[in-house]
Length: 228
Image (tube, rainbow, N blue to C red; front, top):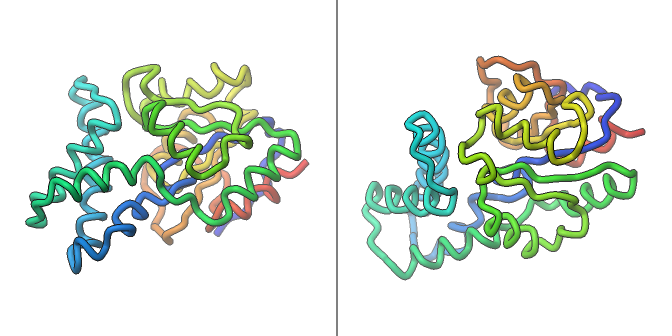
């Protein structure tokens, strides 16, 4: 992995789902109710959730991330032959309190202590983000929660990334953006952010525009990359 030092940073902007929060922890809490279908349902749910954001953006037919998440879960249940309305309700509720990755609270606290502005920039709705942050008890470490609902289109549209400089009052080259999603990291880099790709799952790089500055396995490596 490339752990290149990133200079001149004033703000750290994080993707939420898959970067700060474990999207598979919702199904993980109900594995006993899904049995051997649990992993497949979780994978399909996440895949369709992302696909629907991209496709709705291309269609010009935006619906918010809560609605998209529910539609993706409906698809996953039908695809894998699951019919359980109570479980569907419980899984959606669990999505509001996803587990954060173990290193996240300490990393955010250290960045704030070092004087960096910290924000989330996410596809999630304001309510979803507020609920997840409160559940993880990391709200004290975050200055802004930025949702795509302000612009009505999903990542990787440049209008989403522009929300960061606009909200923080900084040029893009003063911001480092973190995502575990390689396509999101590429989109942010193409926009003009410095980018640290949090490659939690050992993915191959995407063949997309945008030059990623650094690749790290977890967020624990971030403070050393941008330390003052």
